[in-house]
Image (cartoon, rainbow, N blue to C red):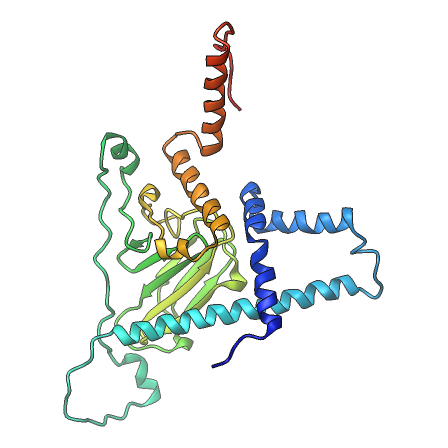
Length: 314
């Protein structure tokens, strides 16, 4: 067994030590990662000699070195996740019945026309009818989220976490190679399909992604699995592209196992953020707004002689 070195353990502890602080900062910035980077580099310029204290572009070289180091680490994690997911899918796939061994030679140009077993698909997402009168209005025209907080549509299905999205696109009958596929992921647009045929997806994404961190693979020769990294990691997407029917994000339920993986402080912040998001969607006060309202009510009780009729909360 390979154990992590002392340096690796120290690096991991350093990385996680400030997660709570950085997550709290990110929650306050509406501009996503761009604004977070602006804040960080502005701090270096205003409070340190980072830009002026070194010669020969040392600061720039340091930033690029650290970027490449963490990029390599992130790409390895992403690749490991994809490999583990594919291995799990293969392990759970039903074993074919034993047949007499047959040897059939297929020429390379004929491979794309060979027909594999149909791709396994989940039942299509159903309209959300709501659980009560208030839900009925919010649920009109929307779908119930699937088990992965996404939707099962006619030509593809998708699931999501706060950080990323997995899109599974079912290709037309046939067996294909990567060179037959078209996958183009831009900041807020996506195209998926086969070369020489009408695209299956060609539309504007609901929100921005990080194209350099997005990946795709061809599974079993007939399913394109696309992983999208969200730019804003603080929201649930109601749909993948503009042309999709929205899901009811009020019914989204994050996996408890994923929350339990977080340290106490970070988990508390994520749960608070999710609570506030649900409150906003229902037109109710967030946790901070509720604290202000509670404080005001307490002050009213302590000062009944005062008139609070014109008081407005901001």
